[in-house]
Image (cartoon, rainbow, N blue to C red; front, side, top):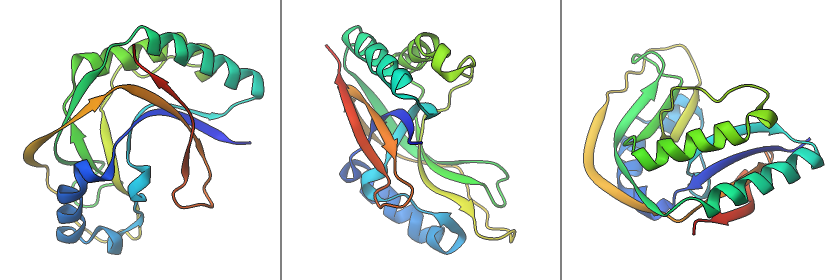
Length: 180
């Protein structure tokens, strides 16, 4: 079955410079199994996993309702950080400032789609853009939290993506929902 998630796509051009610097400085491709394709960069809002056709229709209807009730906003990408142990984190990402509108969108999605998720969305939400994940080995490879001059991205909608693990890029836009 096809797996799905809803996210804010991030154009590579916006983050190209800090991403290339971090990749080179930390030698990410040498230490991580998964380096996202430039077209796969995004801020995940909710991951659904496999959806039946009925669930997929329901998700699309709810995303349409949420999009119609959401105004455009701006996200700020301003650093490099990680999840996991700093001596060898499991995920390295570009950090996104926790904007109020982004948090409200996340919580609205979680509330309206709790039925499909079959669990409440997490109360804690750390918006981020993954740039490396799945360490290749257990050798220490420290990553430091860094800040860079803020990069702004205007968010005018959300996209439902399907996942094709055998392809590159592996995330395919199934449908885009523009904000009013």
